[in-house]
Length: 412
Image (cartoon, rainbow, N blue to C red; front, side):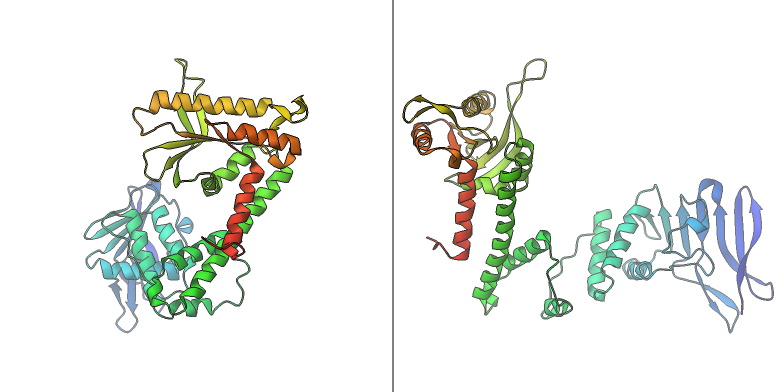
């Protein structure tokens, strides 16, 4: 039996439609349109062809706010009778929602309103709902249990009444998932990091082949380290004097700087203000990286220059092996001392700071002649206030770390 909805009343800007059967018999209200206010209301139903009766569905009313035409409604909902959910992702979501909320019968989808839950009515901000629907679509091939977790966690993100639902992989589930793929060559660094984190979190007492698992994690660490080293070497060749590029590199891979310290440190802040502003709010001292030791009772200030910076002047001050410091190295040292002094003066009382360590990363030692290298080492060994490290020395430390991971150097 053919059915259609027809306009029955048009009063005060509100158009009301009814369902009619083939005999022009009205069966029930189908929709209401208040387009001037951007309100469209649909009334979902099921139709019994034998008895010619409409039966309202459990969700009796779907109200859209902010849409001027039915054609512009989200594609997850039917824009023509019989009204209701159109996409599989919407059906999955609202099916679970009906099991969670036994008494609700009305849904409001709003472009501008907030997501709220009451006993009989649930209002969704469209962007909030869309995030959940996209997550379901992205994982459409997963199990029903996984979809339930996705929906539950999506609700938790938009409503404090819900808590995120943790889920553990069951026996064989990971194997079945991996078995769907024949190659993993397109995995990126983020994918590999997730796998490495997973390896590190596994309870090794439950694994028979623990050694294999650990070796697999080491291989991932080595690949990641290879990428870090390759990027370092590329910048040495192509951006030796680009301080901004080096700042960006160390911001992304701050852990590489940890190897400059003989004790455990954690990054406290990058581009940290250490004081010294005038009344005009200028001339403030900014250190590139501010580290805190593992006991959180002292700090270390680290200043980054460039590998292209000259360390010593080319012409000997006194032959054959006495050379003056370059302007870049001398200026960098004075900058470190100034930062340290200001930091102790302005923050030393409020922060635990007892003669904080200062480090300067600058230049390439390999660019020095034999005589210059001797002079540089003598000066560095007697420089008690600022530790000087060259870029190629830092790169060498990364190469040593790789050798340790690959077993070419035995761990002590």
